[in-house]
Length: 338
Image (cartoon, rainbow, N blue to C red; front, side, top):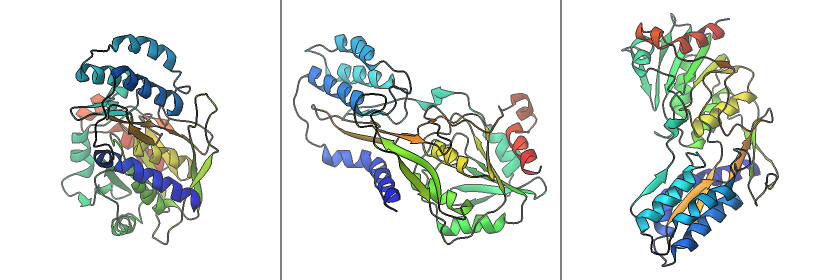
């Protein structure tokens, strides 16, 4: 329970950061540009969780960007330089915030889209699909399979009613598909909530640790994260989760958690990663920042920050899509009906 409480506190801090920073960091402090630059570089060097994992030579990054910062540099230019430096981390959880701009790494650059939304809507959801909270769903393959399209963990908080309704509706199916392709993430509490319909006992779903100092092994002790078996209705059949490179952050957490379940398979492309929880602070000039300070270790011992690999790699066949067929869904159906 202690571990789960710690994780939820961290999650709340992450979700609340952008709104809170307006309050906590309202006053702008006058300082020189080099002090601000050095402060940010050192914070990343000390606390970012993936420099060694990504083979990033942060010292060489300093050599490249430091000469660009002069004493008379404008705020616009300083922001662009520091934002570009942070983008060298290629991490969607890394941002620089100012009163006039926000820097970010575009996670759509990570890889190709592995879904055709029109095909999904016309051939699988069809016109009579239901909308339950953030879930769009319907029966497919003559009612043998339940198909659930979940496009964002961020739209709203999943309710008990929604989950009970889905479990009841698809209880007699031979398998269930949860499609999180191009789901860019959101509330991690929704990850735990959705997993709860598959859990019959308290189970370890991953471990986490915090970066504490520069160096490859400078992390806190591993803490187990468990999902509790809530007193709720369960889906006991086989499940396929569909992913692609646009499945980021909370979607990667959901995907990596499936490694702990014998009845859940991952189908599609490797996720976009984003398994580090971000935290941040204030720079000497009043701007704020955030970056990933934790790393996640799957139940198989792997660190999948660069993307959670599927059990079955299936890339969308664009020619088949032209005829209304999603071969990723069809592959998942075949596996579920085996």
